[in-house]
Image (cartoon, rainbow, N blue to C red):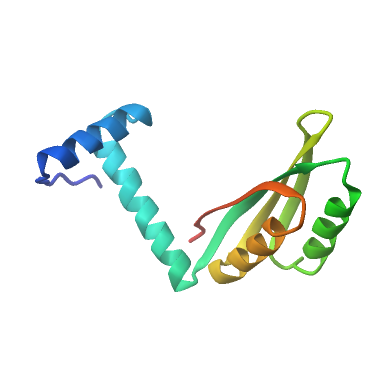
Length: 132
């Protein structure tokens, strides 16, 4: 059920909201506010250690076979958290590796930090969303 309510904002904060709405392609302010509230609630759940789902995205030079071996070892040691793992070869040099995960936020964060910290990872990011 959708409910309406009024919100009062300082002019500069309202201008920032309007810029956010436009730059992120939201249909209106309400949609952006819903998104931001949901995002905040989800992030709070990460701190509360609820069960969340997500993905760890890694970019690395595929020519360095040691990186792939270390990723595989970390994944084997965390099989209870991993739903799937995929590799996509972006070009001759780079591999995009995605690890889909489900579990307690604290454990997923630790897993992501371990993967991202592998020597040679060019970029890594964990994205999580509540799973309840």
